[in-house]
Amino acid sequence: MFDQLEARLNKLAMERLANASALIAGDEVPVIFDAEYREGMVGVGMGAAAPQMVISNDRMPADFIESRITIRGVNWKVADAQADSELPTGLSMVYLEKA
Image (cartoon, rainbow, N blue to C red; front, side, top):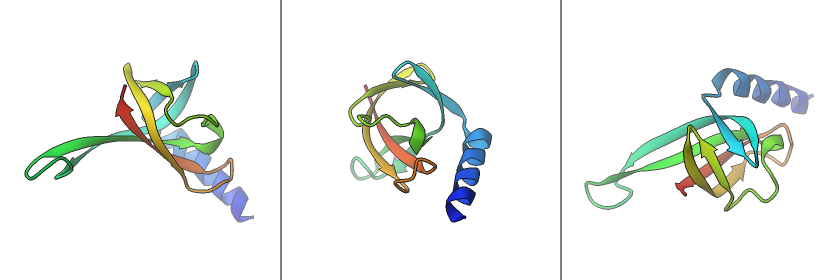
């Protein structure tokens, strides 16, 4: 029962909160994109952006790490992906680098 509730909640979250589409292997995939600014990541008094996106596990290819994607016309390389579960109904946090 929990799996079904999680699936419904994650599907609804992606439908309502997706703010961008990622072009992944030729497919447009809804994502929640964030280019978060973090102070102090580079050095004293300096900051950097840590671009990331949330994607449904079932929309993430098996060989996703190091692949190239496009979001809002900008090319990115997938640096890492952390799934919240092994279920296809889960969500993954994907960390990006400029390609």
